[in-house]
Length: 326
Ligand SMILES: Cc1cc2nc3c(=O)[nH]c(=O)nc-3n(C[C@H](O)[C@H](O)[C@H](O)COP(=O)(O)OP(=O)(O)OC[C@H]3O[C@@H](n4cnc5c(N)ncnc54)[C@H](O)[C@@H]3O)c2cc1C
Image (cartoon, protein in one colour):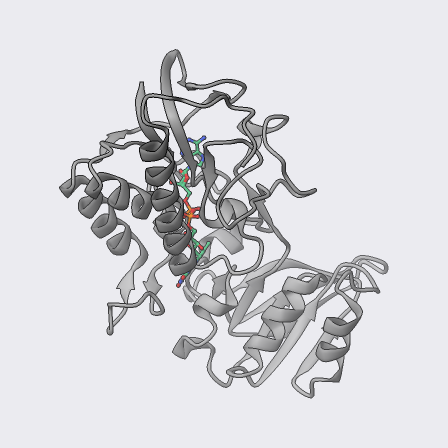
């Protein structure tokens, strides 16, 4: 039986591994394996599709997303983390030791730390994929202050609170922000709607969807074709950036019916990193619908590892049942 199995190799997973390994817990980390598409980014997680990370402390000139993840992986290996280069396909959390499967291989663990992240939802059009990181982004906090967006017109796609927040954030840098929304009413809370509507730099393109992002041949965003969903009419708008704010999908399917989740699938945690099941912790974006940053994911990964170490040390040989209150 393993003491600690960490599922996921984003900032949360690697940080949990570094702390657990340095505490001589000999952790095993399942890294997610090879990417299979935009909904499954594989080892390294979301930062593997990011060019520049400028807000992770410790790198004053910034660092590439893959570069940062390579460093974290190497640091976790340096202290003895063992890595299974594949994804967990099934979990049984009904009793301890917990059981996890990677295809046919079965693993047992006293404690599990879930760090499986969440993936941004994308429009799914070819021009979006071609211009990702070249003006197309799913994170205004991460990318909004990059020079390519400064004093430029930008588009935000979505109609919920996140879209309003992203648009308001972008007004600090952009000359104008147009919120593209497929309906004629927003889903966002009244207060966020009002803030966006009152802002002099924010406009709305109602009943509209992005049909195409331009200009793939230039290798940067120069605008987009919007289609009116009611009339079918199209129009070209100028923009240097397109920010998607149409939601995220937490990678929590394998725990459905076993752990408490919200309506979208985010794991519900209490006392910071504890899931609804004793000795199962969750850290990073899979349990965070608010901040979704590398540094917050790393922070909760650290917290989960420290809590896991404490639990293992307090249990000793006396392993409590999975249904224990905590
Ligand atoms: C385009 C883009 C740019 C970004 N830029 C920044 C930025 O500049 N600064 C910043 O702070 N944040 C940025 N973010 C946000 C940041 O990437 C996330 O907040 C952070 O990566 C979350 O870390 P995590 O460890 O929770 O999850 P993730 O990074 O999502 O990693 C999840 C891991 O779990 C693995 N996994 C999933 N399911 C399984 C399974 N069943 N078995 C095993 N493994 C599994 C995945 O393969 C992956 O390795 C950006 C995000 C995106 C999408």
